[in-house]
Length: 357
Image (cartoon, rainbow, N blue to C red; front, side, top):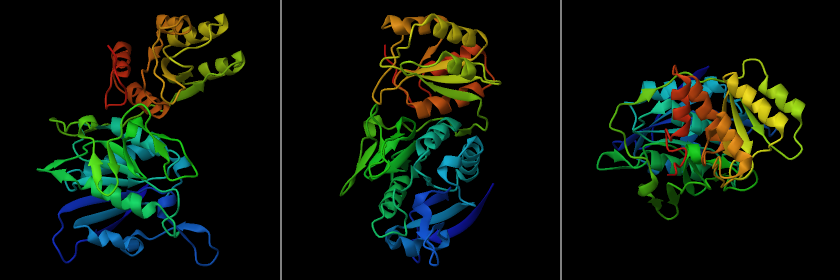
């Protein structure tokens, strides 16, 4: 896995006021039509100023790293998340902010994963992308890219306005590990139903500073391990015993995100509860999340979730499935005891969940 590097001074011949590292992994935002057959192909990022001439208004020193070759976001995996964390670590002190161009389909997973891998992040890491290729006339790519760069370089009195991993799309800046893709045909592709927007871009960019994570006092720490042996089980009425059994007994399974109904409720069939209990006894960590887009798990509120709490299933509060999967990968990779890992899953590590009294 390698990156091609291009240095661009958008401010030339003026002195730049900020420096941004732009990382292109792939996705619609970097595509143009091939002249011969009109198929979409990645464009040369050394020509980004020609594609987005508005960038000349920035007083920014821009460095572009382009994954060679770019990949569709459906093919993003653990190794790519760790590589992105390593790239940010190596370049952390050289740049004021980071913008990651990424396909929309798995962007919420990647933003969530980066949030856990980057502890004590004190600079903006902004994910963005597009629904329409940058080479098309009615593209949203230019606006998303320009606004993401503006947010990544936004500082006040020497401090970044958004020192966390976030997603900018259409008009909204959302916490990365609170985001979910909800739209494939319109420009407002991402939603954060359980947490307020960090900023909204209109004529001006209005920052909601009260909900943005504070800048940390400790230095950046990068983690470089994730446990990929996790699975997601979405419950539905009439779910088959043999399917659940096959998943829970899959070789090497370490963790399970259990998508339950409403406030964390699940069937109370004896066979179902026994399969979960046996899995917990074998050391499989089970994290309970709600299927509802704006739902929140309250294990024990109803009889149908009391049994889960009793057997050791961990309540995920209002965490999203994307954040739950990557958080489980992160926590299970830590060299800690079972009780320590449980405690990590029950608390908010990067603002990914709301803790209730």
